[in-house]
Each structure stands twice: as C-alpha cells, then as structure tokens.
Length: 560
Image 1 (cartoon, helix red, strand yellow):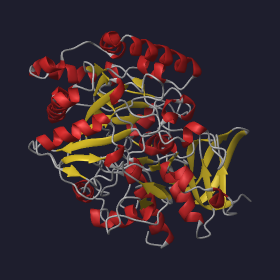
Image 2 (cartoon, rainbow, N blue to C red):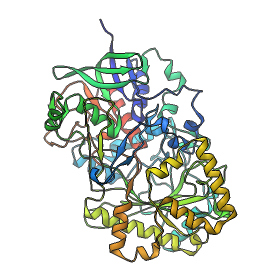
Image 3 (cartoon, rainbow, N blue to C red):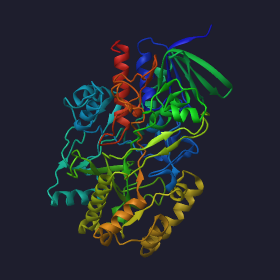
Image 4 (cartoon, rainbow, N blue to C red):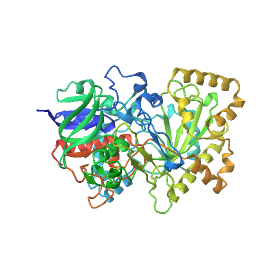
C-alpha cells in the first residue's frame, strides 16, 4: 500500500515554497518536488544569498537549453533563464517588489477571477511582507519577506540627477510605489536586506520549517506527468536520481510557473486536443487555453559608460534603485502602463560596475503568445513564443517610452555623468560574457582597466560590443527608423504569466477557476503566476507570493 500525501506540490519555486510552509503549519502532509538542487539553510551559495542578483548570471541555477522567441519563432530565439533551484525565479532574479495597481486586479475580476479584486488581495500582500519603510493599513509588519527602498541619502549620482530632471518637468516623487499609484518618479521597493536576498526558499522554507515531520522534499526530480484515475488526479510520475517513482496525493498542486505548469498539463493530456493528438498523447480534457495567453513585459535597453564619480559604490548591493512609471494615455490603455528602470550597475563584474542603463518597458502589453510542448518527454524543452509588438498599440507605446528615456539622457545634469548612450541588443553573446565564471571575471577586469585608462575609447568599445552605434537623438525624431529599431531590438523580462489563466468555465481560454482548480478534472490545481489573467504593472515575484498566500489560506480554512 503506497503512502498518500494530503498535498503533492510540483515545484519548489516562488509559490511552492510558500504553499509547503503554510500547509504543513496545520498538520497537512505535504510532498514538495523540485527539479533543481537543494540549498540547505546555512549552506546556501554566496551568489544565492547576495542582495545583488549575482545568481542570475550562474547558469547552473536555470533550466538548461530553454529558449524563447521575443517575437515569432521563425524570427529567432534566445536563451530564456527560468529558475531551476529552491525558490525558483525568486532565487535568481532582481528582487524588485512591485504589487501592480488596483486597476490590474479589476481586470482579473472582469475576466472571471471573482474574489481577486484589489480589496481581496491586499490583506495577503500585507501578510507576506515586513515593510521596513511604511507602517500603515497598506503594508504589513509581521510577514516573512522584508520590503525596503533606498533612502535618498543612498541614491547614486545618476538617480539623483534623474530625480532632479523629474522635478523640473513637474513629475511627482512617489515614495511608496505600492500604495501611491500616480505617475511619477520613485524609489523601487525591493525584497531583500542590505546584505541578503529574501526569496521564499530563504524566508518561508526555513531550517525550522524543514524539521516538520509532515513535510517531505524530493530534489533533482522531474515530474513527467500526472497520474489519473478517470478524471481524478491521484499522483505524479517522477524521474528521480535513482529511477522512476510514482507518488500519490489526495490533491495535486502544480507550481511550475508560466512555462512549466502548462507544459505539465499538456504532457498529462490536458490542453488543445489537436496538438496532443499530433504528439500521440491521450486526450483527457480538450482545453485550448492551456499554454495560450502567455504574457511578459517587453523591454529595451540603453547603456552608457558612467564617469568615475557617477558609479555605484561597491558597498551598495542593489540592482535598480529607482524608476519612472507613467501613462501613455492612448485609447484603450490603463494608467501606469509605461515604465523606465534606472540602473547604475548592470552586472556582477568590474565592467558592470562602470556601465549604467535606462530600460524603457511596457507594463501592460496587449500582445500575447504561447507555450507549446514539442514532445511527450519532459526533458524536451517547450516552444515559447511571446509574440511581442504584434498589437500596433504596443509598438506605439514602446516608441513613446524609448523616446522618453532618450530625452532623460539629453538632460544636461544626466548627460554630465555619462558617455555617449548606446542601444543594447541583449544577445546570447552578451549573456555568455556575463556568465558568472572566473574567466569572465578576468576578461571584465582587463576591459574595465583599459576603459579607465583610456576613457575616450569607451563609447566605441561598448557600442561595438553590445549592438550598433546609433545617434539616439536623431533616431527618436524619425518615426519610421524608430519603429524599425524597436522592432529589431525588442527583448523581454523574465515574467511569464497567464498560460493557465483563471476565468469562467464557459470561456475556452480559461484553464482554472477562481480557486485555481483545473477545469474538467478533480483534485488538481495550478497555483503560480500562470493563473494570472493578465500582467500587473510591475514585477511578478511578490504577486506570485500573494497568490500562494491567498490560496493556502483558502485551502486551510476549507473555503474551497
């Protein structure tokens, strides 16, 4: 007779660590399965702990061979890092902690996510956080995740100069971007302390939690498919280090994220019947929404060599320090749909210490893509197509926000800190140079030393290394050339959502109901970023924690 867990959680990423912690707090037996290696408390690698995202540059923490097309598949693909380690993306990405805006959640409700309005989710944002700057009804003080913002005294010269520029055009300063949703310039909220990352693996799945007798964890284990009895999910078929294993649970929760949750559903017979039949996968539920509605934040990069006095101090271990959020005001768009990220340090190495960038991006895109498995075998990576800028209004807005970034760099106080700005094409070649290796550290040190000795050549060297040499001021004055540049250089963040979205059962694009239950089967849920009906105006880490907190509370209180 095999053991039956109360819950099997597939994926110890951002959501999975929260769910395992909360569910085992009330004597539920939980099996947590993770494809990546464990990071034992007290033995975590230094780059995982670093409050600068050094771990992002370590490819051993991400899924090998995973590629994505920013636009169409036939227009080329590039590496797409997704966390394959305890804590998932929260252990490797940039720790920006924006919640999104109330309007984002109103749209969730309109699409069938009843019970997910701003008023519904706010208590769970408060529950997860220990806000170090604000003590009011909008923020929590007792949660496991520290949230902080750089004080003005800690701002780098670039941040101060852009703040002055914002003031000169009457752009308000937003002290709390998670509570004040006006357009403006603000300090970015981060989930870390000055010396340590705050992932869900570190802050939820602590040494004390790991001692619970009702928590079992299996690492370096790949779930190949879900086991069903009829339409009832009863277990998972797993490839472990020692062979194939079947594990059984009263309820199966998939927490693989925007790419791997729909992939597992498809391998298990839930998805577009035509695709599954082509791959000779028996169809359990014909649900065309699985893998559709894939959304991500499109982004562009403008780099510049910072003068010595303008560089971020070595002691300050932050990624972005501030940002500008504003509205395109185009028909059919929501407020706060545009964003410019401000960085005075762009990589872990000596060269990254010298290079700053502005990254204009679109927070609320209308273009959607897809995830599609290419095989029934879990080891074969899926096809990922984001289909960026397929909606004309997205191209218009990216042109607007890119132009705004160029105008900022033309401001005399900002210009005085930088070399000639250059567009960055974030290619696989550049990613290779940024990998966290001793060899790359030596290369970066040599190049950084050269540019310090010969600052006059920095503009030429950097623009050649990262893309094409362009006169950006002239570019933004020519709409045709600007549109071509945006189309050619568009990239994306690492915020895939929506591929198993919540919605009404009558909506063929919906995959789960408002309690994250997969339509057409029993005892199966998806709880992670993939259930979000649309992107929020911000990064996805903290919203994913909120989703897990809200669903854990519902499960424990027998609300679902």
